[in-house]
Image (cartoon, rainbow, N blue to C red; front, side):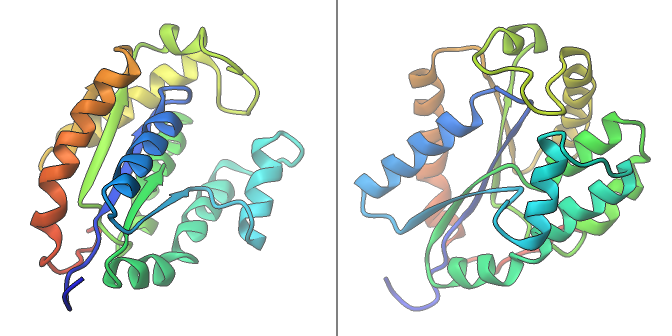
Length: 211
């Protein structure tokens, strides 16, 4: 890899059970098969100290106020930012399951102010592409293991989807919306094709920040 070629920061977003984990895994496998240096990540990253607090909150064993848990999620992204930046600059493409937008969407869906929710995300690395998997909450509720974590309630997921839609229209230049209820292989083909075009395009562009 020639000097100065960086990797792409690709984010998967969407409501719970929309297929983000499956699609991010398929994309990582595809890039590996093409010898593209790639790494999968997801937020919250539960192994750090902050991540462990988030984990106990999500599994319903710890109660925190909405504001506190929102800032914990944001801090969890900030604590990994230097590491993400270093990997991208080394030429590694990062495929990330959930990012700032989930933080904003879930907190705003609980009734917190949208701009307040977005504020601590400013300055984090801006993704090169966000793949937004959208499906009716009623479709998602029928998928396996639904309802095991704190946020998986259909009515709440509807509110989350509305916030994602709002962000998607605001950030349309790098957000790609997909119908998550289509067959996984069709969805993967669409995502693969956009990724193919994206990687060479961003390789020589400087990293940007959320503003």
